[in-house]
Image (cartoon, rainbow, N blue to C red; front, side, top):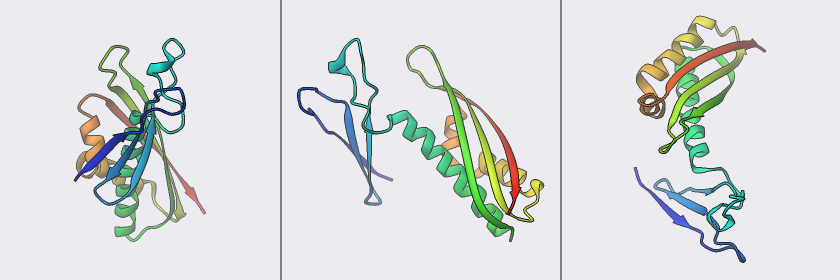
Length: 149
């Protein structure tokens, strides 16, 4: 897996803290830092997600992918899957994630709660590289609900 990240440089009179990532699969992702009121020259312009937000989003995408795939392989009629992630960070540098809660909402026809619970556990115990990696520094908790549609 490869990725190249380029600083976008100055924007107008501000130095900016924007970056464009070019992934090995040929896609681009824009990131930006938070504005810094105390030192505007060091802050971002709030034009895109923060790098750690993209890390959290990628983790959500990784585990949601697993959950949907596991349910489909189990021949469950899954029609939707949403995962809402909430993370806490350390107060001192490096400000790693210390806890992450993932709440899944799975919708479908006749999808058993036990199957969803199993799919989430399999993702976190075996398949989701991102959550396993983040689990080295963060306590990861999960919850879910199943909606019949």
